[in-house]
Image (cartoon, rainbow, N blue to C red):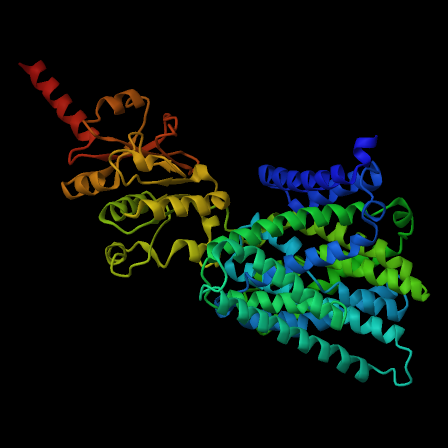
Length: 611
């Protein structure tokens, strides 16, 4: 078909397939990477619609490399040193001890298991220590495990990506070095010197950006594109000095920016996160589509031995030895020892060196591509589909978040938090003011001081532990900003905000307005001061929803309904949860409750009957 042969159509199709796979993964709870891998293989070798080598030609390698650079920068931008308070020692051990052990064991596994030469085995073993953000990030997004585990896996993946690439660079240099003094010391010094320069370049760019942006030297509308071009330029400059050292530059640049103050952090965070999702989707479709039948036929049965050794010996031994003398609990160690999916960086770097070594005439180099794809496919499916089950069996799965996060510490929100806590609902109240949080602290509610946008984006607050967010500050513009910014992450149906305008103007904008009537912030506070309070009502066959609503007085209305399965559904101007038998309804009512009115009415009926 001529239409399908159009490069423009294929580019659009790659985007559609990648984002479509991400959306299906979100709807079904399946690993996104696994679905993208399946879709790419179907579109590539199965149907032959996408053939990256034919379609993109010489552009394929630079496209993939630049995309990987931006992805790694995005990963570095999420590495805040505050996360290392709990996991710092473990992360150091994972990089300094687990990495080298995994390289040595991986090299032995490739030599004895796959039958490769020592040189090719060492190259593959070095590349296979990577567990990059392209696979770890999407996997952790669907898992709820302790923060320490997430931080260890995230830091390991992002830091080990450039290290694995540099190991491959060093081994490739050793294999192809034709000078008279071809020894490990000379080559190692060459690689280390280039890596040091690349790291300095990344740090300099990171400091430059964090100096320029807060001082207004770059206009707001240019900040995101300015940052993107700086990342690409830094990567290219370092890569020209020595191949693959650009990965160090962008990672260091991201880490520097993550740990220095920079204005417009929310906008930049959203930009780089959206860009990373697009690039991960597109590049993974392209890479999986490069797997042709000729490559598949090169896969030999003995390679399965290598995969088994990699999964069940290399990773567990390297991790357990590295974490032996750390404070990480054994259950968490075992989980980390199992999780090690490989992704874009492993395939891209392996394919690059396989091509170069084949041209160089190195025997066995043709086995690198099918082996790398086999590792990616095996680890993505093995770890992606088993991670939640393993976490549950080890007792570290934190389950689906069922808490409620309330932003804005007022008398009204504290009263609501107090009732929810009595109903065994986990509640946290966040506010920028330590003074405003005093009342919540006195009520022994969980509190968090800080701007919720910065705290959420810096992963200081795990939004995954909350099923609902109530935005209840006195600043309507800030309420809408929070809703607009966190809505894509939590889901707009899981966020409600208070209206701050009795005339209803604030009812236009992002997010649902709390209460069926859309009661405004000021009137709610006035009612709370007048003695209004939150009450809970059990809906039974005897006391139905109709009876409950009949007992509501003027201005009184339901706030939320707690289902038997733990779901807490909030009433809003655009949401009317169904109230059923067995539910518990939370209402905001005048000093006397519907139950008290019912009792009073029954007492009066009884008196009339006695008369």
